[in-house]
Structures are given as structure tokens and as C-alpha cells.
Amino acid sequence: MPRPNALPLPAQKRVSAFTKPEVYDQWGSDAAGVRALLADDATITMFDVVGEDYWTGGGITAKKVAEQLRAIGDRPATIQINSPGGDMFEGIAVYNVLREHPQDITVQVMGMAASAASIIAMAGDKIEIGAASFMMIHNCWVLAMGNRNDMRDLADWLEPFDSAMASLYTERTGNDAAQVAAWMDKETYMSGAQAIERGFADALLPADAMKVDEATKAADRSVNELRAMELTLVHAGATRTQARERINKIKGTPGAARDDATPGAGSTDWMLEASALLNSLRA
Image (cartoon, rainbow, N blue to C red; front, side, top):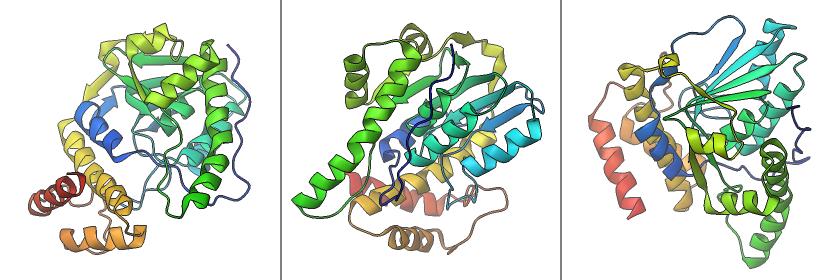
């Protein structure tokens, strides 16, 4: 099946479309620490959030993926994904970069491809998914402030991007457009078998293609708490700068990003305090 056409990106990006905090929770519960057993020099691993990540200095970006594809050259490439998503517009940019690769691309979903990561997955000529893995699709999710006129304007501005995603999923899967839109409206999680049944994937990955690394799992969950808390604080009315300052104050390491890209992974005190704050904000 040929890769679909490019997706539109905003000429002027006035907002960011994020992954919801609840999706980070789901990823931390079901997919944290899942990694591939094997990878070669024609494999790009995407075991991170989509977009630049303040908390680790990492993240999946179109710039990084383009550099990795140049290093692979004119050869087939494999993309291994375990991601809760992130910045939807960065996900679209990564998808557009992948679809320009001259050779076949095989996407392997290990753990989860949610939100923006599910867009990236659609760039595969072949999409493989683990039996215990998940794919999740939904509409653009943003944090916004303003009056009713601002909200109407924002909804109108976002609608073409939801339509573009729905068209991409429809073209790749062969499903009815109304059905795809309904799945997006409901924020739908699909198991490996469901993803194949609905055309979002082509085949199951063998169980021995993946492993769960416990140290990585703990690190994934630790930094995930930071990401989820940041968005929850912003949802409560803080700016992203204010949210990050408050979280760094709890951590006691203002502005710090650890060398292992898992800030505070070895600490429990700040995690307990952070979790308590996060639960109180969600209550």
C-alpha cells in the first residue's frame, strides 16, 4: 500500500496540540520500559515523546529524524515506536519527513503509538504491532484561554487538522470516513489485534521482538510524572514557565536535566510530593 500524501502544517503556529495527561498515565501503566531486542544501523528508535522534551532534552523531532534518514541513505528503514505522543504538529512534520524516504519503511509499534505517534506510524509501507501493544487516535487536544469568540476561532482553526488526520487514517485503513471520525471523537485505543482488524496495522510482531527493561521502565514513569504534571498545572491556569518552575521547586533541582535524560529517576521524596499534587489537581 503506497504511503499517503503529506499532511498540512500551520503556516503560523499559534497553539500547540498536546497529548492529554491521562494518556501519559496510560503509557506509564501499560507501555513504559518496552524496548526492542534487536536494532541495526537502518533502524530509527522512537521511544520518547513527540517534540522537544524540556524534561530530558530529548524528544522525537523532524530535524532529528531527517538526520537519521540521511545517515541510513537509500536503503529500507525500520521505525520502532513506543511513544505516548506529544506535539501533534511535530508528529505531522515527522510523518512528512518519513514519507519522503525513497525506500520502504517498516514501522514496528512496541508498547504504544498514541496521538501524534499514531500519525507517525501511518508513514510505514508496512506497519507491525505487538499483540499487547496499543495504538490510540483522537482529535487535536490543546490547552487554551480566552472568551467564547476566541474559543470559536480556535475550534475553526483546529478543524482542518482533525479533518486531515481523519483523511490520513481513512486512506491508510480503508475504513469509512465517518467511522474514523467517530473513533477520533471517542479517543479510541486499539489493541494489536484490533489495529490489524481495522487496518491501522498489517501484521503482529513476534513476542520475542520486545522486552521490558525494568530500569528503563522506572525512568520512563518518573519523567512521565513530570510531563503529566506540567500539563495539569497549565490546565489549572499556569503558564508553561510557571508550571516548570513549580515542579522544579518540588524536585529541588531547578532547570536540571540529568545526563541520563531521566531527571530525578533515583529520587522518591519529590515523586511522592509531586504525585500528591497531581492527584489533588485532578480531584
